[in-house]
Image 1 (tube, rainbow, N blue to C red):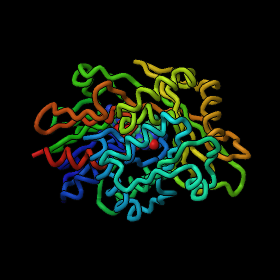
Image 2 (cartoon, protein in one colour):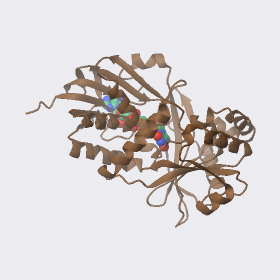
Image 3 (cartoon, rainbow, N blue to C red):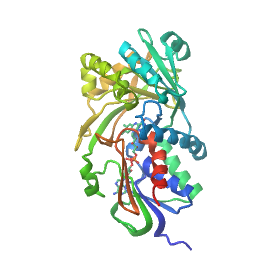
Image 4 (cartoon, rainbow, N blue to C red):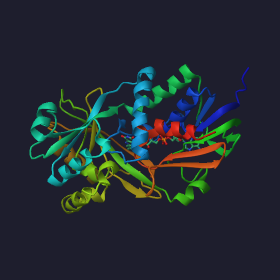
Length: 375
Ligand SMILES: Cc1cc2nc3c(=O)[nH]c(=O)nc-3n(C[C@H](O)[C@H](O)[C@H](O)COP(=O)(O)OP(=O)(O)OC[C@H]3O[C@@H](n4cnc5c(N)ncnc54)[C@H](O)[C@@H]3O)c2cc1C
């Protein structure tokens, strides 16, 4: 009989990064235990848009990992009973300078499979978009949207039932000294440990995290009920996204757009606002977001920030009705230099923190790379 306190891999944290490591490990035949301090994951992984994004991710590591992660989501979601609520991205460019950024993007290898429509063409394909005065619309087929608040639980159950992963919920990990892991309830052992604890910057491995100068980033999110029958063509973004998502914002053409937006949208930029809209199976829209940074962030959502987000929503979509039905905040760690921190405290231990708003889109790709380099 197998010892219930011994595993090949212990994962700390049952968010998408921890689950991606658990999935990758069972694919390699490892016996895995995931330990989560809360009774269920209620962190960033259930608070996000469920927007699995490829186009717009930063060139290099993040785009490569997103491409691979999208493939894995495509394989895993049907097996775990997770619905792909919609596919594709429509990014509307209203300003000529936004169009310049999209044209520059189309000349990069990252535009593979994407189409840049003029406003007339886009209007017939995506009637929900408000395109009066728009210069054009980027369409990307790569994106997929899942309902994160249920998908994380579905993935967890599937890993337990189909792959024999042991989950220990309601148990905080207090110390990792691989092969020993001490929790609030037991002492466990594993050949390897992956610490995927996201915003817990002052807890486990705080001394390893501190030199990286991470801050927290907090986002405001809304659920909005549109009029019955309103249908998004896919995920939707607009001009402000072009100065935030690194795949666009690091193109030279983005500097002129940023200067214009600073003059015209200063208040939104000060709150780190750009528009993402996705749709749920019940027709409601998940809308965001803002970005506020600090060592600690008050959990109080600012009404003015919500108003600004809703203004961008109404400018971008042909909505007759937009009733806010839910508001929440979510947090992730943020780094000025990297989208993902992979630290190797010793041969048997890895600390993996996604230090940007890209974890749903990249975690499966990150986990594969972690294991590929973990001999
Ligand atoms: C509002 C919002 C919107 C976003 N939108 C998107 C999006 O659309 N697309 C995208 O790709 N990314 C998005 N992101 C980013 C993405 O959600 C995160 O990068 C990702 O969820 C991080 O996953 P995680 O597993 O590291 O974190 P989490 O989901 O926070 O999980 C970490 C877990 O570790 C547990 N933990 C911490 N310390 C301990 C301990 N000592 N012992 C046991 N357990 C512990 C916590 O309880 C937590 O459950 C968004 C983020 C936010 C906040």
